[in-house]
Amino acid sequence: MVAGIPGTGIGGIFYLISALCMPLREITKVARGKSSIRRWKFIMMQLGLASGVICGFWITGWVLTMVLPHQTHKIFTSLSTANVLKIKPIVVSITVLIVVLLTAEFLGLILPKRRLR
Image 1 (cartoon, helix red, strand yellow):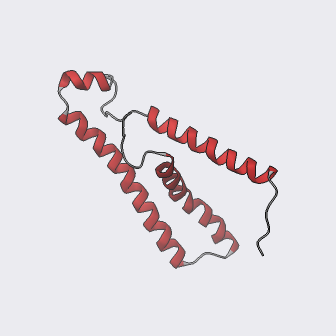
Image 2: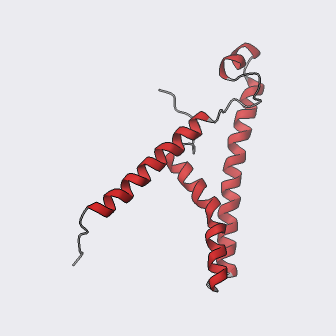
């Protein structure tokens, strides 16, 4: 089992997608007149954190390509890419996240809701 890079699991991907979608959702609130500067400050902070995480992923891959010997580098990456981190693990994480979210939504529709007293 390989540990991988922190933040590339379904929890990290969920955060990144949520943070990147926040400005889009807030634009609809602007159109309805329900937005505020305080909300935009929070959104920009989250967007900055998400951007930092994405840059961290890229820099980690770039540093690994510089640190690994040339022969080992050929094992991990093809000649056409300059980064050790390939897209496949991220696609797998996004696919698993989509399956989990769709399953949760489906179960929420078919299971009876319990009332709290």
